[in-house]
Image (tube, rainbow, N blue to C red; front, side, top):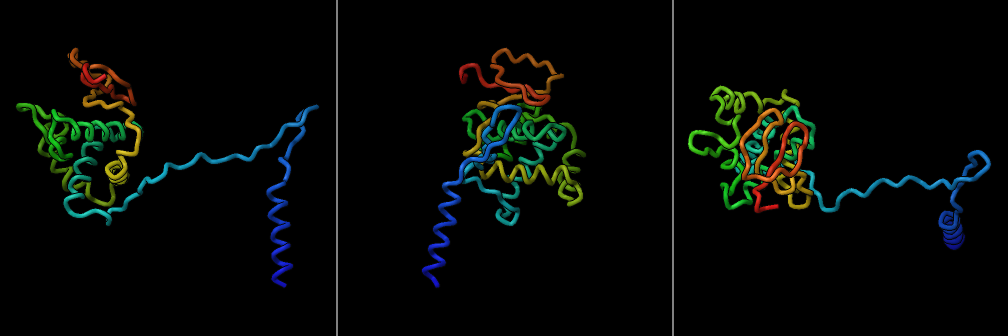
Length: 196
């Protein structure tokens, strides 16, 4: 019985392997029907969950999520990812602090690098108290995005091409010392001129 089952399995497998590509007639000619193939998903990309992180890592996630939320919550996802990459590019730059929370909170004199952090104390209190509420869908999606980027950023393409700076397209700073790299959503991204 096992012998016949094996032979049947071999016959079925060979029929599948040797099956001719299907074609269909369009007008007077035949067109070969090629099955659609889904693009491969990136290998080794980790999709983390909140329970995967300890208390200190959660602080980092909240700092990055807060920066994305206040800088780009109304941007498309690629704009939010770009803001995250600028934050992480600064962490990796010798010219900025070497951790996410310090980068987000950094001041240059009395001016914050990310204006939302200095704009008002009530905004920061809102950030601490209200955004962590489970009912804020936008913020929760940004927290998930932040976790994903923090875990996988070294495997992902940087859409900003190494940018350390950006501004909204309705602002006109005098940044002659910077090189414009790309526009994503309503933000314009820059690198140092010697870092082209």
